[in-house]
Image: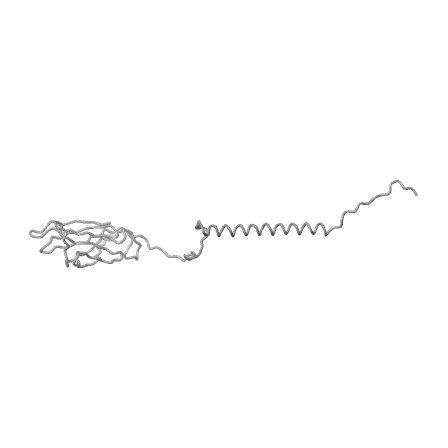
Length: 188
């Protein structure tokens, strides 16, 4: 988010404009942000070189915080690196006070600072490892399906062999049923 504003021109000074932006609109406590912008002439857009810029804010607890002072380069650009002290929303204001050639200007941008993120160890496959939980690419899918077919065939063969062995034991392990004939009606 960036802001642009200007102060009323001094009597003989040209009006100026300043921009301000943050490298990330939302960060975690403990992380730093880069605040950048450009000071230029409002009428002609010419960079205002080698002039002071200061940045400040009011923290979420209501305390004034001076972020720092910088000097623009020959291109009119300035930059600050800053680490916000507490979480909350900050309206960061960059101010170019004034010179005899240019009147002052000011701009504001918003920065949201959230709770610090925690890092935890997690097991994740290396980029070269195949993750079968994800949809495989065409080549990996074919290879995965081929392995599945081979495993299924081995299971079918193992079951068939087990059944044949079991049937073979029954057939050869028991005696054939014997038929016992009784003599019919023999009297002695």
